[in-house]
Length: 274
Image 1 (spheres, rainbow, N blue to C red):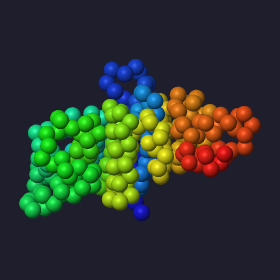
Image 2: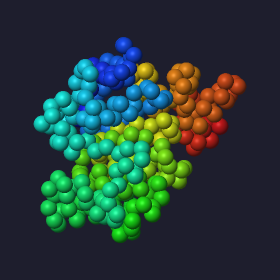
Image 3: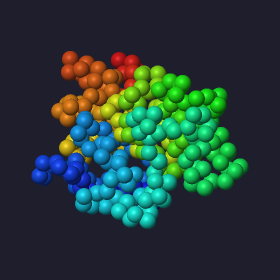
Image 4: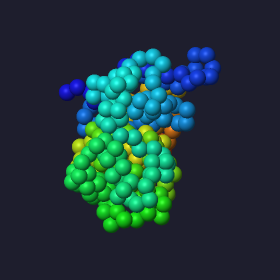
């Protein structure tokens, strides 16, 4: 199986940055169809820069990015790349443009030339996936933060991308809103079979990911399954990152001499071990 996202020796340097200071430095990553990949890192590690590069919003200083075989440097393919890779940003207000929910969701596919009745079917399906059917006639600005983010995700889904890139989609949400969005992400990946790339700094959000990539100063510091990455508690702390609460508690108890596995991820697993 060919990767749907292929990043080869990627460098990116912002204009005006100190000489030699790269936001991303010789980064190589492959993501395969249907994968759920989480990207972690503290502020300044290069996470959001990577998201913009994948969607062709900015172009590599050096190296290559291919989305379904299309090079992001090829201007003639940018429209196709953005149809293949849908982007969900931190602030849903930056993506919502209409005054009625269903009209906002229809905006993207309508501009792609999707005809009726397929357009209506796409809107209906997107609303169902994010469980917002009852709000189709509502004004987006009256919704909660979590509901707005689900509408933003629905707008991307209506365009039927193969890949959904989420750049810290829960950063501005309360715990309930975060829970709603994490449930939606799981549905996209498991039920809708979308390739998901989640960029976040909340450790509990990536427990269900297939793979976790930890960035540090634009390079890969750690990579593996959530169990493999989070079991390396001391390395994560050295990188300025946390681990899931259950993992940290298990680590602290193990330091006190209690015999526990190092790769506990959830409260349920910790309780069972104890």
